[in-house]
Image (cartoon, rainbow, N blue to C red; front, side, top):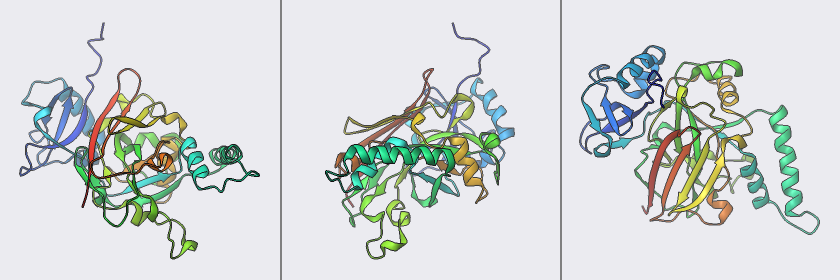
Length: 326
């Protein structure tokens, strides 16, 4: 029997009643949405995060209160929050990094796939023990809705999926330690960090290395949401299941246990360089199962469904994004 004194689970989202109507912040409980403008006039989700410590108890009370609740199914669900900064962790899943190393290695009788996998695994172990996370930046304009179509730019035919867990900052953080890092996280959401593979490395200037600006910042290349789930409902961000299907076929199905650096380490490391602001997204990296691994990249008409789940029936929701031609 459920504990009647247990807090009611809820999440936050951004919605609109139709394409021509203004967006509003909403409190989500089950399949109902409470528009928050009566309690927080003209507030966006990012505005709520600016005063998260004070707002959170109010949301908890509203989750169990009567009010003018709307049906979730009739609303247009937008990205839950528009950040000022998007920090993307790269090469943060062991299996994914090992798969990429094999993909790009020159395999010979003297250097087999098994040797490359063993060498890369050893490198990941050393990185986890003594290294630091690898970050690059995304633009806020790359954010897309969780059910929007995404346009595949015509300048390439090598667009790929990367479903990821993202931490949402709820308290400013600058040069904090790992022990206190999660105190600055409001909650979690889902992102699909789309990548144009043939633009990752500059062919005209290989010495410069990776070019994440061109590879990841096309409009809508970061479908986000559907919801922001407060961290108190996510018992362990290091024990979640990340799943992406392409046209119904499972491509990514990995545990966040495979992360090299956990969420707290990522947040603390990012804060050493920049001041993290409420609403900012810290992407935790892509698990294995990207299109480059399968030799099958995105085509117009493809439908990606992404979800992140955990124990005790936890779900961060499901996003459904269709790829379309320019």
